[in-house]
Image (cartoon, rainbow, N blue to C red; front, side, top):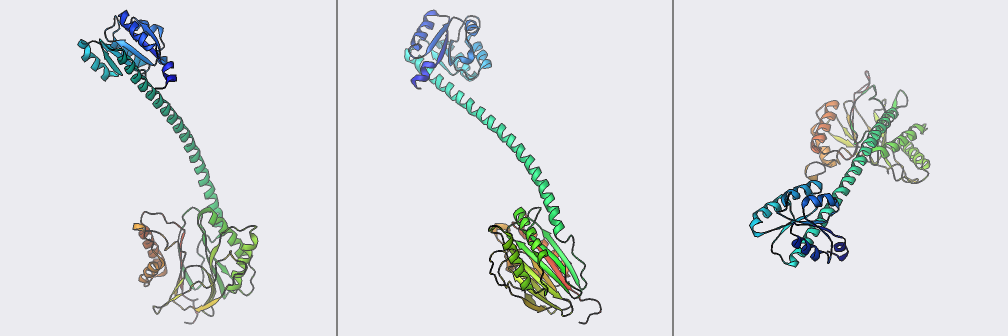
Amino acid sequence: MSESVREKANVVVIDDDRLVRDLVCRILKKEYTARGYESAEEALRSENLASVDVIIADVNLPGMDGIEFLDRVQLVDSGVPVVLITGYGDIDTAIAALKSGATDFILKPFKNEQISISVQRALEARRLILENRALLEELRQKNQELEALNEEIKARNIEIEKELDIAANLQRCLFPAALPDLAGFELALKFRPVEKVSGDFFDFIPCDDRHFAFVFADVSGHGVPAALYSAMVKTAISSVKTSSFVPAEFMSEINGFLIGSQKRMSYNYVTIFYGLFDLAADTLTYCNAGIPSPVVMRTDGTYAFLDPNSPFVGIFENSVYRSERISIGAGDRLVFYTDGVFELTGANDRIMGQGVFLELLKRCAEKGIHELIETIFERVMEFSGSRRPGDDITLIGMSYKKKEGDEG
């Protein structure tokens, strides 16, 4: 205990024996402020117990005894330490008082140092009690601040949810509300965004009676930033004026639009598959700028993979894009998927991987296009279990039936 604390300590001594009371006060006044009283009632009338640091009281007092006084003190302030003075005959009473909250007891006759040591212990106990109270009060205030902050966060989360709902509605206005009715094709879709808005999107663009284009895209990241960039990509697609509908030219214009529209580098990019279907020639001409290899499932049981053949879109101004062409026949099925399908994590932090996904696809080869897409989606979700997917998941299936009356 530091000297400054000892000098400030306020000690009250209660004993009906004047000699004992004066002796204790004289011992304490060397280091503390000490005042003596003949009875507990007198001390209660004269002292504000909340400002007292230590009380020394005889067990056997006239009127209110030391035990009753102890109870009264604890009602006023349980943190004020009470040291009881007792004789050998009252030691059981003193022990009972300790169990009731007394800090210490001193047996008569006592030595001077016993008084000093007992008060020092009581002051240390008082200090710890006050520090604990201060910490509890600080904790209470912090809890109140946290509760207020939590309420603010809840309110802001509600606002964000409303804003996301608006953003999701706006995004749905940019892209097909449902799969189109394309003569010669049966279409199936499964889509699960990580957030309410998504960076995955697709579109069908009619060109003429013979041709239609299919755009399948996946913006880097997910959530609001990806959704905003996907809206920018949609604007780029709507702005393209390629007269020949050549996929490589289309992709080059999209790339130029995205790069030219950004006042500074955003570090966003998009992977796009752009395919032009020629229903008269039974061909698909495509440019794949980074979309995981779409699969063509042939009626003879073979598979063709439309591997990426061009760089991502929206990064480099001088990127070169290529077109390739394949034939499609009646009964052929095409499956398009974003990387969120096979990059999700299952048990033991194991990632599914594209190879496992393609094996799953082959095992479902006998199913119709709707059942095939539905089954694959269910198996993918089963693999992830209770874990939330880390990226948007999009699966689109196309089954080519040819127009009624066409050959083949």
